[in-house]
Amino acid sequence: MRAGFLAAMAVLAVAWPLSGAEKRASLEKKPVPKKASKTPAAPARKAVPKPAVKPKVGKGTQKPELPAKGNPSPPLSPYSSVNGLGMKFVRIGALEVCIWPVRVRDFAVFARASGHGAAPRAGFAQTADHPVVNVTWKDAVNFCEWLTESERVAGRLPAGREYRLPTDREWSLLVGLGEEAGATPEARDLSVRDVYPWGLGWPPPSGAGNFAGEESGLDAWIPGYRDDYPNTAPVGSFAPNAAGIFDIAGNVSQWCRDQWNQKSRDRVLRGSSWFNGAIPLSLLASLRVRASGEMAGDSIGFCVVIAPVGASAPK
Ligand SMILES: [Ca+2]
Image (cartoon, rainbow, N blue to C red; front, side, top):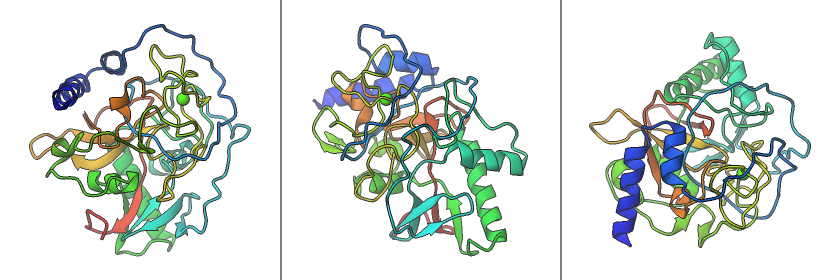
């Protein structure tokens, strides 16, 4: 069993720097291609938690629209704070954690105001409430730095706190893993077996999140699972986890702040996406993906936290 996991890890580590299509081919192997359906149906809202891991690389064009029918506004309350972009946060230890990934609408404001250039677009249709994709690690960091400055100027963020990406350890806490052994993301990769964002057991329960289900139109998918979103879904379309976080896994993979290890400058992706799930390994809560910070893809986004300046982990 251990050997199997190690072999799978090796596949991931080697395959990741490849293009999305290549990586996908090496990771999610399964037969019978399907035709992609273009129009996401209304969200399958069930009473279940969360998903987890792996991206798809590539850029494309798309035109953002307004919220799709049935796009739910998460009923969570109260929030610890709501910022100038309407991003909602819950307090977890010393952190305030945005309850969903950064949206197309959030990143568009940053792109316009900061001179970042054209906002990234997916190779499929997205509404303004979908998670932004095709963002590099540096794009995500730039967003956080800009948001820190603009919120301070507006008087909504004290000097001692900042927006930033979650660390790898913080992300583990958010997904419910708790403390993991290992000094680096590389060492912690797959350190906890058989635990998924929804708990134990395979396959994901109905409504667990936006994965590669039977609706995906991909070459490989999760047999018997359907979430009605072939690509990204509006944030908050599925139930939050116990920490009150939506889409921490599934929908889009998320950049973390860390380097892969002390030597490599590669970064870390956590959480699965609409592109993953054909093999159970790709949804494990402890799975990390090593990725160049220059990489961007249709299944890669990010979430943000508000933390004490200089802090690297929740107290
Ligand atoms: Ca899906």
